[in-house]
Amino acid sequence: MEKLLDLVVNSIPENATPETIFLFLLSALSIYALFRANVIYDFVERFNKRELSRLRELLADENISEKAKITLRDKIDLIAYKKVTGIEANIYWQKKIIHYYNLAEGRLRYSDFKRAFTFLKININGELEIRKPNKTEIFLQLIWILASISVFTVLSLLLFAFVYATMSIRARIALFMLIIYFGLMLFLFLWLTSLIPTARKIKNELENNRLILQSNHRNIELKQTNLHSKQLRPNEISITNKDIDRIVESYRQQNKQRPIGLAKGEFIVPDNFNDPLPDEILDLFEPK
Image 1 (tube, rainbow, N blue to C red):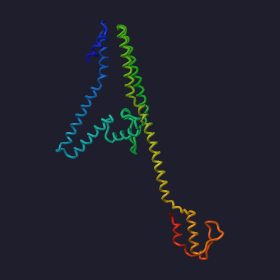
Image 2 (tube, helix red, strand yellow):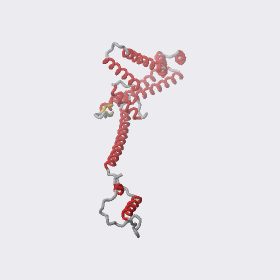
Image 3 (tube, rainbow, N blue to C red):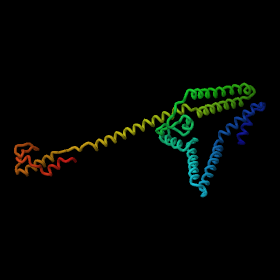
Image 4 (tube, helix red, strand yellow):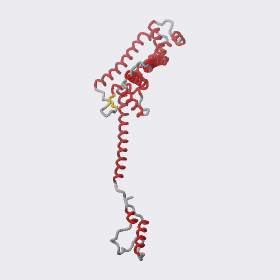
């Protein structure tokens, strides 16, 4: 921090106006806050852990009723889900968001769900959907973008008009860098607050997942239908040449004669043709 302040103080020209000094100090504090964001994050993280620790201590108390313990467990689960998704919602919504986040396989982030949370809804089938933004929301989004860009442009021009003429070359370069920095912060802010493009991105991903699930269900139904039809289909009777040879040999043994002048697989119809066939022959025609 001291090195940064020394750098800012040395960059201020000797004949600088109070506006110029304020500008340099503001830029230094902004850059310092940007690079020290981890300190703010650690403070918030410690605050959340303190709340979680207090809830766990209450849960371990034996004097609390079971109904109160169930409420405490739900509260702990809600905090845990919120730490994962970053979204303030009930456990049912949290589980839905985590489920569809896993289905996206990295194509969606929790920040996408968080930005477009106002467009999310759950249909009667329990599936996550994106509602269509109305004309008022689209109009307000465009007004928000145009107003942000207009305010940034006007402030930049006013800054040039009041400060640029009294600044040295080094201070002018620093001013240009500061304007570029705030311009990038503006576009980052607009990107973070842009809801409709993020909602469309989630909608496309949900439609792709729905088509994949429908295709998988259709394939499963076809497999089940084929399996069911095979179970209902009567077993086919397959008789090979070897079975025919066995039949001929059986008739030969019964009639004590071998067919003469006949091709393989043919036989003479015996006199006792109307007699019942042997069991071993009938077994050949039983379904396998």
